[in-house]
Amino acid sequence: MPFDRCVAPRTGATQRSWPYHIDTHMSALLLDGRAFAQEMRVELQAEVRSFREQRGLPPQLTVIQVAGDASSDRYVRSIRKLCDTLGVAFRLEHLPADSTQETLNATVAGCSADPAIHGILLQMPLPAHLQADQAVWHLDYRKDVDGIHPANAGLLAQGRLALVPNTPAGGMALLQRYNIDVVGKRAAVVGRSAIVGRPMALLLVQSHATVTICHSRTPDLGAILRECDLVAVAAGRPALVTGDMLRPGAAVLDFGINVQPDGSIVGDVDFASAVEAAGALTPVPGGAGPVTNVMLIRNLLSAASENALTS
Ligand code: NDP
Picture 1 (cartoon, rainbow, N blue to C red):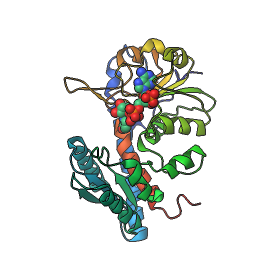
Picture 2 (cartoon, protein in one colour):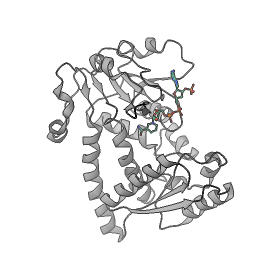
Picture 3 (spheres, rainbow, N blue to C red):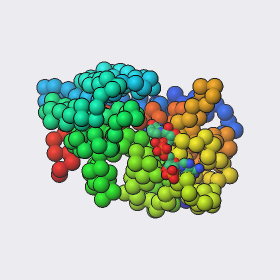
């Protein structure tokens, strides 16, 4: 059954702060990532406080950043601010833009070996002369709060406890938040990247959905999506998915972040047509995006709990 009767949010908070209901022509339930992220921040603040009480020190996140990318600077500032708000200790290892692969690898290895550091984020993109795939082998997978280490990808593929990439983890959390049950449902994921599409598909399989993974060589995308109760899109292509490609009442997670020439941001789903066809939909901005950062802190707390991945 499609998600046309999605249960409303558990608490009144999301409902009250939701501006999207103003337009009565809209039919889809809009999944409000901003309100959900705020709820999670409150929960995480309490968890960080109790961690500090038990251990005598806060969880510590270290970001390793190689200079040279302005959008990375903005992202790292937002992570620092989030850590400050939640009481998480934040440290930045800022390397010069001309750092060698050996320096990067040694920095990652040093942070991995430092018992005071609970979680490590290797900030992307790296300058063209540096290989993330090489550096990641120097990362302790138990501190891999971005879920990029092959060991975590393997654990996830095997259906075992893993540190999962933040964006798909946030997508699953949003579905759960809105009581959108995926058990036995047909789902499609558009995109097969290691950081969004692939782990999203694996998480859906783990939650007992029947999943089709689509990509740039998939013919007749609409024919596949129209069979699905849930569609998750992470392609980086504005308006790739339109309302006529959706099964009426389907739940749609739009992970796309596409900056338009006028500076505005749109997703991969054509909002105007999809909102009429879908039963539930994440708007862009304000849907999946805001949940991503808070999932990073959720992963940090998992990484900081002893034996989290070895039990
Ligand atoms: P990638 O470029 O790594 O992957 C894109 C995927 O989409 C590829 O698998 C590609 O297929 C597929 N694809 C491209 N064009 C089409 C098409 N016409 N039809 C079907 N599939 C297609 O991107 P990411 O996964 O890193 O990111 C995807 C989107 O999600 C971007 O907009 C990005 O900005 C956003 N994003 C959002 C985050 C968030 O916090 N919400 C975090 C990370 C990313 P193929 O493999 O065949 O090339």
